Amino acid sequence: QVQLLESGGGLVTTGGSLRLSCAATGRSFSSGTMAWFRQAPGEEREFVAAIFRRGGSTYYGDSVKGRFAISRDSAKNTVYLQMNSLKPEDTAVYYCAADSTLILSSIWGAEHYDYWGQGTQVTVSS
Image (cartoon, rainbow, N blue to C red):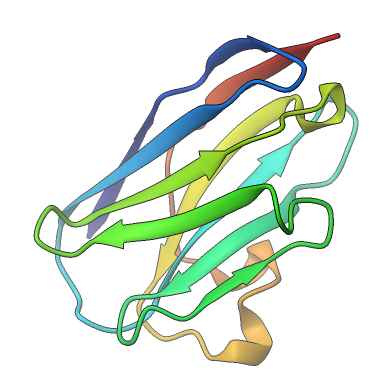
């Protein structure tokens, strides 16, 4: 079993920055994928970014490309999401997700991940 704990959310004004962290505990796995999704009220859960644990390749949703960056610290079993140039439309609950078996074609869909954190609120005021 894997537990994911997010932190770093909060309130920021337009153009500001935040860094989210996701610490994974429990069963560790050297391969697979860790990702960030977000969900605004009344909306579906949206893919934000993903990183392969082996190799470190990164992938982003179109709405955050060039503004957000996902990274990992393997020694700490932690994934980060650096969010810059934040906009009011980035306001959402951000969730960390992980899976040990994903392939590239599956990383975009929330239904493919087995492990989820509890979420952290990010609010961007205009």
